[in-house]
Image 1 (cartoon, helix red, strand yellow):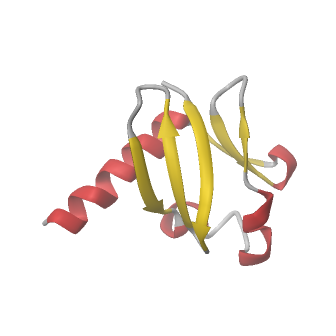
Image 2 (cartoon, one colour; image 1 turned 60 degrees about the vertical axis):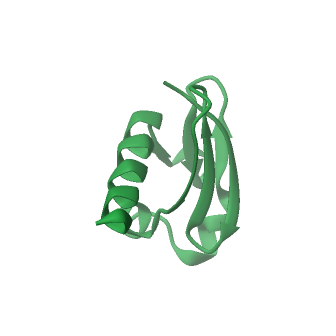
Length: 80
C-alpha cells in the first residue's frame, strides 16, 4: 500500500488518496502533534518512491500503512 496523493484541506486535516483508490479526509493532529508544529504543516509532501507522507524535508515521515490505519480508526470513532 502506498499513498498516491495528498492535499491539505485545513490545519491538520488532509485528504489522502491511497493506491487502492480509497480516498479519506482525516485530521492528523493526534498522529503528528508531537513531531510537527502548526507552522510546519505546510511542509507536507508525498515521497513518491516510498508512498509516505513527509514533513520537514523528510525529518518526519509517516508510512502509508500507519496513515491508513489511523484514518480507519478516526472514521470508526466518528461512526460510533
